[in-house]
Length: 325
Ligand SMILES: NC(=O)c1ccc[n+]([C@@H]2O[C@H](COP(=O)([O-])OP(=O)(O)OC[C@H]3O[C@@H](n4cnc5c(N)ncnc54)[C@H](O)[C@@H]3O)[C@@H](O)[C@H]2O)c1
Ligand SMILES: O=C(O)C(=O)C[C@]1(C(=O)O)C=C[C@@H](O)C=C1
Image (cartoon, rainbow, N blue to C red; front, side):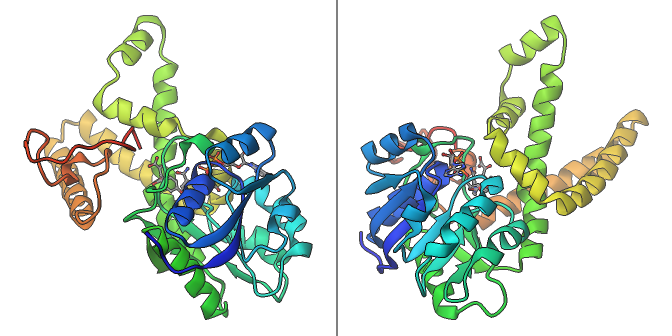
């Protein structure tokens, strides 16, 4: 399948889950000519070449970015400032700098000052991922029917925004523009808080003593198992997200703490109607989330979405990329 060509040369800084998925998808859909990847370790560069993720790989970010039409930052957030400083002098006129980082105000703070006047800057965030990391974890379908949020600073060239929009739409994503502060607050609730809770539950369970701890692992099923999937996500990436979205996360944590204290109180005083009312509201929200995503493809995290029942002899077989996502 071929889409509109958006770049002759695409540079991807950081060939992990997101960088390699974008490279694989952009190639599959004919959106770019040559793809150059930048990775620090020789093993990652070798893997990226062997898996056909990139056409060329280098350890030098400036070498990757030189002559690129689009440069994508796809490392953990803490690497952005040094990378931006390194590529700044070689960025070619009318090229576009973009990124995939999970927090947006900090990206504008960290990359923005290094983007020369003759270069466009369109920060972005694909709201799609898994708990896995590294180049082997990438797959071309990752962004299909998922949102990508763009947070271009005011006054950004509309053609540059249109080209980055075409890149993400070309790999199957839906694109929306948002104010970066608003992005950070929304994602603080929908993505960052759930990860913090998952990390906390798993570490609370792992602090249990002896037999109890063994049984948590032995009987890990359902809810706890789902939390361990999320808590298996990359520690460096998530450290950076919390350090860079501090204000929004602290504010939402404050509200979360108040809500959990209310539930704690209801349990203590046997206020069943309070609990039932809260759980009912949550169930309605879950139904709304499923309905909103109903048109999408099968997602193993949301099996209710699959149209035919698994026992249906007409059901299509689900092969390929459907490990735990
Ligand atoms: N994993 C997700 O679910 C997800 C989803 C959307 C956005 N993001 C964002 O995407 C970015 C990358 O996340 P990922 O999941 O692909 O992580 P990842 O760990 O799979 O890949 C990041 C890669 O960057 C490399 N790297 C680190 N510092 C580097 C440097 N200075 N130069 C070159 N390479 C360097 C790492 O070695 C690694 O290979 C993060 O900013 C994250 O916030 C992640
Ligand atoms: O599904 C997962 O494993 C994810 O954590 C993906 C997820 C999310 O929270 O939805 C994680 C971080 C990103 O910035 C975007 C997507």
